[in-house]
Image 1 (spheres, rainbow, N blue to C red):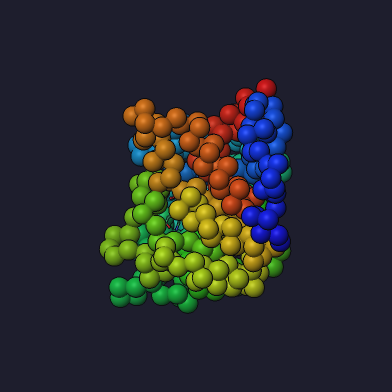
Image 2 (image 1 turned 60 degrees about the vertical axis):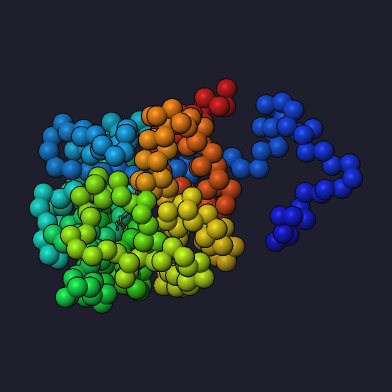
Length: 331
Ligand code: PBG
């Protein structure tokens, strides 16, 4: 690829402002276009009936009971967003996180309901991790004070299988165990895998852990999630996941890791996704509530930056809202 600096001439006659003169010209020469079809909406599913419980740290986001899902899916599809990423709050938790692979588990039932109501037009992506289901809140089996990698792998594979049996289109392993993609690929040769490949131990997951009730009861996740300081290691993770059979890879968080989105785009040919995480969403919402940022402009600028860096797929809590804004901008 030609380096960006050589692409657009800075010849003597160059005048950047000529093409910025009107909205129509700016629109014509725009290099990055967002489309609702590239957005994935995360959904938190909880037990109960008729429940829409607002998540305090994520204004506009709710924990939904299963009966709320058909309407939610319909609104997303009407707006042009064709994919969801499911997270579950189980009825009860245990040390192994057995709720994750329960055939009648919360996400399995949610998948069935979405499939029944929305059919094939909705791409259902299911997060594969144990932290929402374990009593200790870690992403795998705890031995002593750390998470046992190889004891966790069969549980992740089992979880992925049960989510696919329920009707998930894509499984998205996010536990950051070594060889988790290989373990899932081996038991599900035909299932698309979206691998959270470069996932930092980030401070920006705070609101999610409140939303999904998945904060670790002791310690932190730094011995399995990546050090945010490391980019070369992130690329090693990306290449390993592709080699293990990942069909798409995900970088997370998004704005704090834009360089990794671009680097992942450059070193592989698989679709690249980025996750604009809960803390990125909450930060924009909080500043906007105080009148310090324009919510819509800040959200769209961030999403555009994530796409410009090379993400063709963006997981974002703004998905529905952004789709509406994009439609308005078309007029
Ligand atoms: C599960 C998981 C987490 C997120 C997505 N999948 C939490 C974590 O790793 O602590 C965070 C998403 C967000 O912050 O929006 N491991």
